[in-house]
Image: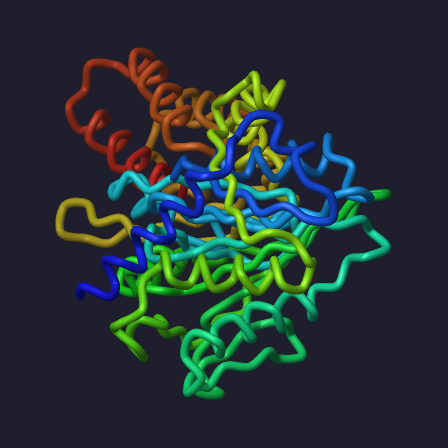
Length: 372
């Protein structure tokens, strides 16, 4: 415990020695920075800012960051297909869409994120992952870790501890990867399990894998030790001083325009609206008065909005006019529980004052909203 405390103090003294002002011009060859924020949108915005504004020909960058609980989907993925959105809302876990491809990951403070920025010509994800493995081996020589052909890092030849994704721009590129240290695996497995059935999509699907935390293998490790070891190895390979510069992703003087990038990443239009077109063909099993009604629902969703909507209700379940208004109102609306709740509440005012009709309407609408 004393050794770990000393280690943490030494690590903190190292990072505090480097000023944050104008960090992009303080060193040549390479730079190591770490975010002081645990907000997923702010940290993803830093990636965008560096990619768009820094001259990576002069200076390559390693960006270290950690997030409070969040699920991050790839650029071309479908959130309804990839995770349990209802559970995310219940647990107040953020959902973010990054600008790189790849699969869906769960982040919390027990997970380290590493982003390697280079020019497109110098982009080499395998070398980056080998660097991480070399750092882990330097810290704990007995760890059985290696890089696979799929650009994952496996522990004990079996458990995935790191996934990878990348964005290749015209001249700049970045490769980012995760490192599972002490993430909450119960939350991870539950939120990354979609309850959705009957969804058809051309979106990129995630590939499930067995996972394990590094701290399960060696409880004496800390996140600070791992960050320091990776930073040291990066410094050695790039022949630069081993300094970690702390940055605040909300600092407009340091990162002009960063706030706009952060706001864009939080918008419904980006997180959900960028989902590739998909269709839903499912059956709602609605329990009503001791009987089960099968209601078939077919929808096409484009840019996160309902393009086509068909609900196969039992005859005389709803007045024809009310049914038509429901379908008409849903068509063109966001495939979103909040918007649909507002919409059906408004339509409820058109219903005659009939308790049974209101019960039927509420049951149908509750089941429709659960789809979203």
